[in-house]
Image 1 (spheres, rainbow, N blue to C red):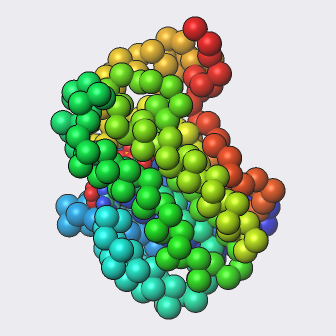
Image 2: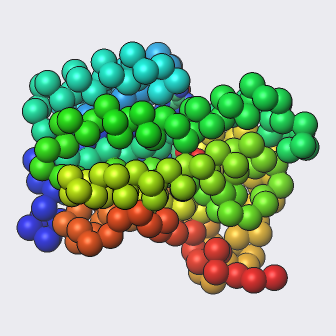
Length: 260
Ligand code: NAP
């Protein structure tokens, strides 16, 4: 299997583990089983503590854990030069990061403030562009960049509001980045994950309603898990997906195919 995936000893940066429920942690577990060398970035000290505990109590090894605040260009440059100068070649990046102010998720979208709109875009969409630019000089053997998106990018999901618009930007950015970086054999794709109970998801007021709707209506009649998103990320990171770039891949029990 390792031969098929060609991920053994590949250097992959995972951004966005806040705790054991994080999608990024599901990704870490999948990539670790495939023998990849994992580098983690975190923002808050609280996340670092949780991540260290997870690493201590699970069979996932971190080659390094580095702070990176994606709202800050210097922090991104520092994190990627630290990893890049250490390993020389970066083969993959998993961007599993998003944030919006809670007041922008709890009011009507029409009331989104200028600052709140810009902040959600900066953190949840522009950050992918900045990260890809910082990592590119070290992705000299080609590679794969994966971002996490959600159906709220393309359809109105009540309460997702400014984050839905940020995810639409993220998905468009995936396509533009794929077009730019393809000449370096760097693939850029997004996974559109179904609803999963995480810290970030707590901020979406309609979240329980969304979970129930998926369970009732999705073709698979259930919600997805972070392990399922982790395994698809593994596939999209691996040699198996070498011909795929600029795509939005759904891991959502098929919910997105439904009409009314
Ligand atoms: P999560 O566990 O809360 O992860 C979100 C991560 O974003 C946290 O690790 C957080 O780090 C990080 N982050 C936020 N602002 C940051 C910044 N300025 N710099 C660096 N890191 C920052 O939630 P999750 O659900 O796994 O979210 C991961 C990704 O999946 C997000 O893009 C989310 O939109 C997407 N997604 C989630 C769902 C879902 O239902 N859960 C569905 C589809 C897509 P700190 O905590 O350290 O700030």
